[in-house]
Length: 143
Image (cartoon, rainbow, N blue to C red; front, side, top):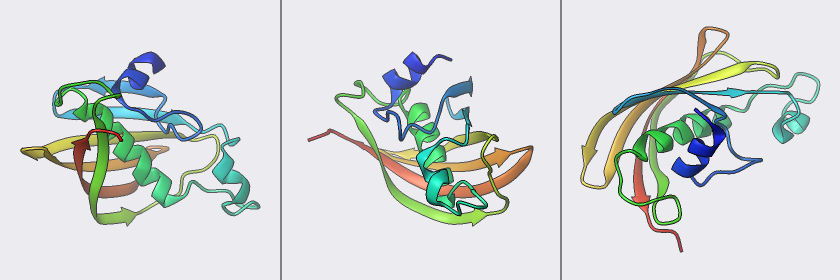
């Protein structure tokens, strides 16, 4: 799906947009990708002689994919409803993500309780799981 559809679903923009392709989007599951050129700002200082994708940004990429998924479950648009992470649990970093890799984020909506959404996600690169996490989000109105 196009970058235009991603922009319509979430408020994130460059240089902090960590999703550039939606591969699959069902009611309770989404698969997205981010192609890492190596020119991203974090690679300049995150181990300059051995650049790797920071784990916290892998989590953020999964959260952004989750926010896109949730855009089908909430009323309003990105100017009216902003997804906000409220919890991260059981985060596990398994493998590295390097410049030039295609990072794949898979997120599943497990449960919704009122305005709280509970999700599980994983990030993959080169066919290997790099990060697993459970997280919760809510949707709020921006200031």
